[in-house]
Image (tube, rainbow, N blue to C red; front, side):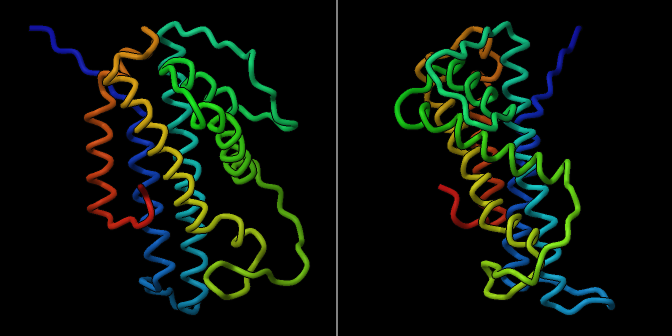
Length: 212
């Protein structure tokens, strides 16, 4: 008997993104035990920053993994019909491939490449971070003031990234259920409904608020 297995990293990274966004949410709620060298406020800000970076990066990894799987299935990317952003990241092309492979339409299809481009800018800036002196302190969504970078990678941004990933998977699931997808996306399409249900359960168990 020959058994075959196949791991789809796009859903693994999405689950990681959800769990980290939920952890950032708990930090915002003050559910943090500080170390001996920091105050409760400092611990909350630092951990929210760390979890948010991880969540944002994980969403980018998830979308890139989904695109890579489709590309590996033989999908040929058509770059016509879209005006490239001034600073084009890989996220723009990742989104184009997903849009085309799952025959996405309307506002989602039009906006996704640009939203994904912004997401990848955030990811890239954290991965290829350049340390610079910043003047003063800056307002944080929690109501305090802190280092500039802590105001960029926040619970809100991680939630926004997770919402983007979930919306992509919902639209792809809808296409999969209508058999509107390129043959290169067949494996992903077959997995979509079950994966979406699994991720929605993780969102519920983690009590991550604000994801529709």
